[in-house]
Image (cartoon, rainbow, N blue to C red; front, top):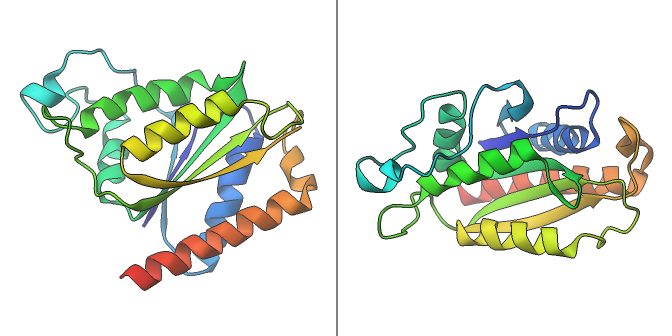
Length: 189
């Protein structure tokens, strides 16, 4: 099963559209998905209470993010999508990411299986796909620290809603990786 996480509040957003395109290709190739749209969920960021590492094995905040955090522990692969806002991921995405603190125990050992694939999809208005290398490095560092094998796909130069659909090369890359993800997951079972 592939956990897909969307984080844009924009209708017809490019980042969500990119993730949905990749997910559709994965499903067509035989994969199954669970989709979570952070903009439609009621949750808050980490409060820094530390209970997840001292008194329990999960985040003690019970909100709409609880099932998603559980899904991250059991899924075979992850697709994360965010627009680039002011040189970084969306605030909604960052609040979700802060709750990953609960995915490690008191000794900082992962509560997730290592080695699973993760696709990080980011849309941005800046036309240079490497224009925000610091952001990409930051995300890559976080994802690898949590045991994921990450592939990043950038939708650069996307200004208006749904513009990603006009980029045939981007669509082909999303389709190919969705198919590859499903094939990899079938082989590992």
